[in-house]
Amino acid sequence: MGISGWTYAPWRGVFYPRELRRSQELAYASRAFRTIEINGSFYSLLRPETYEAWYRATPQDFVFSVKGGRYITHMKRLRDVETALANFFASGVLRLGEKLGPVLWQLPPNFRFDEGVLDAFLSLLPSTMEEAARLASRHDDRLGARAAVDAKSNGPVRHTLEVRHPSFLDTKYVDLLRKHRVAPCIADTAGLYPVLEDLTTDFVYARLRKEEYSPEDRREIAERARGQLAAGRDTFVFFKHEDTPAGAIYAEEIGRTT
Image (cartoon, rainbow, N blue to C red; front, side, top):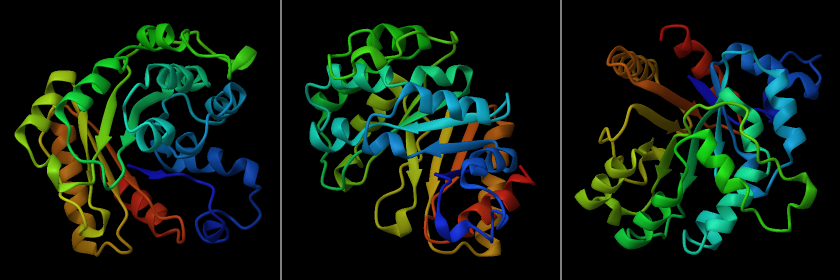
């Protein structure tokens, strides 16, 4: 159970103690939650020293999820992205080592299901840290000397896909996820988009961002998470609430029971 992002002004003095420095917020949050989703990686290529600092600030058993870059998903729209993927993994993602959890790829709302395009993209995604390092070594000159292409661990690299167009309600989509061992991101998105919950690999990934979850909602979320954990699936549930600390409060409450 975790949160999506952690640096939000409205959380200060409510979730975060008022006297806590901003530089200490990740350390504080990572001791309240088992996992946090990194969102800054969606907007631009970060630096290796940034990932290294996050690695050092968090407990040894902590896990980050990393959101894939919008240049790949929203601008290139998954086409001709091998170099862009290399740059993404060379930007410092590998410095998370054993703390690297799933990589989230969020497609734009107007992205329609295209079996060929999606199959080609998923085929490029590395499934281990060693594969990610080999891919990262093919980065282009824009990273220069700041590229980080060495794997700190030999663990898996897992991926989840968040789709937001009804054309993905297609068995061929689910078959592709299963073929490439990619998890569908379960995103309620306030009920605007279809929820695809087929179990296609060994973990579950959910993003919850409705303004409010009732006590009954929270009990159901906790029960479903416990069920997945009991079935042996790693379960990642992120509350995404930037303008209010409600998500952090929900995640902390539910985390105590799962």
